[in-house]
Image (tube, rainbow, N blue to C red; front, side):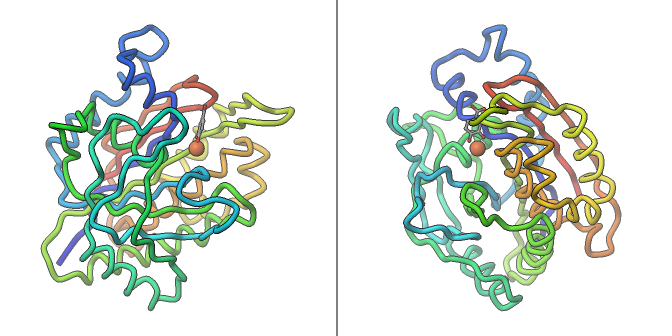
Length: 287
Ligand code: DHB
Ligand code: FE
């Protein structure tokens, strides 16, 4: 049977991808951001997954106001890095896992979550920046991501967005789906985006360290209470784009303790301000 052995949580600021791609990681501004992921890159090598189930949001790249799926699962064999206006990032093509993705779609839809099935989709910074942070630089020609990735896109861009509670319940359904797959696979689930940031309007530039850190504590130790935080609290306290954090609750809901198992081990925790307009948060939890 397949098992979820760990969850990873990280911000996805596009400027982090640009800093990597333009060779700026050793600059004073960026050094402390990347230093927070030194542990994580080693951890990825020591705990290599067979598949990553990567929860992220599309930023009007593959989707637009024409079509707004709340939850979309990528079932394709490959996903190309998207052109977000400066050409595609120079990173490897993302290899999917159609067999596991289709199984999860079947199981989760039968558990009453209405997923959109996506057989063709380019993936933007929401997916490729977390991969770069966790796996380091990879050449598009000679490099490769460490394993297949199932992209799972959540609408946190156009209202109405799903609640934290719905995301948390979906994570639990994904765990059951993974555990009902016959093949022995070591699966990691990632929740990405956040933490506090607001990119527009009168409060552009908003960062809320205190709220972010209290939210991280609650996510780790009392995820059910964290899942009850209403979406307006994210917007008020963490800024309009802080709502991306509900995606972390999908990954958290898939951990063993939520299904009655032991509490996860916090393998790594990191928080840094600023990276572009965003407070960078990062966690690794092991089952
Ligand atoms: C920034 C952060 C994001 O999450 C995003 O999608 C785009 C930009 C930023 O901080 O610049
Ligand atoms: Fe974003």
